[in-house]
Length: 302
View (cartoon, rainbow, N blue to C red):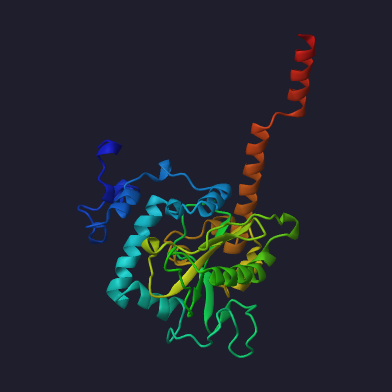
């Protein structure tokens, strides 16, 4: 069977594991989900950090999609969750957030109800920071976190985006909570005008709130934070040791185990190799000093 003849519900699945018919969780997909699943992983382009920042700066949040095989796994797992827990929201509240209720404890957002001071922690009564369980297809050095809140993140009824006041609150919270994870020498002054997204004063930390049409969970308020190549120890601390579902549910054993490494050691090594590959690519693009001298010599001879 030619690749072009493979039905979407068999794509990115080893031939020996092909289902005889379309699985239930892939039936009656909306147009967006079917387009995402109906692509080969090998043709997928992971967004680079500059492309991620550009998408947020220009409000192109629909560019954030998963690798096709990951999106298939995401749809399958969500279908199982709905059968077991009734809804994805119930699972998130009960299992991921472990909130007995979703009632705000303090009227002031991003404040500690006990002290009335602005939060400097990521796990308080009204807020929790976890990994995005099913991250988008982006550079693997980018850590994608979700900040869940019991308090409302109000939109302006006219613009349909965050109010100016709430955007300011989120900017402050992201600055004091996450920007410590990147070196101070990386500070720049890039700001975004939209009220539903922001690039902090540090270019390796960005945040955004999804459009309502793109939200997978509507009943629990949340916004997204992305960090480029942060300190793994900081991420472990800020998420309280959280592990994303997409990683914990992987069937094959960790690749690091084949090298005698722990998961953390393997992730650190992989990031170092990705950084090295990026440096090599830059060297290929930029002409060497010898090349420039030879070119200058030929020009003078001419």
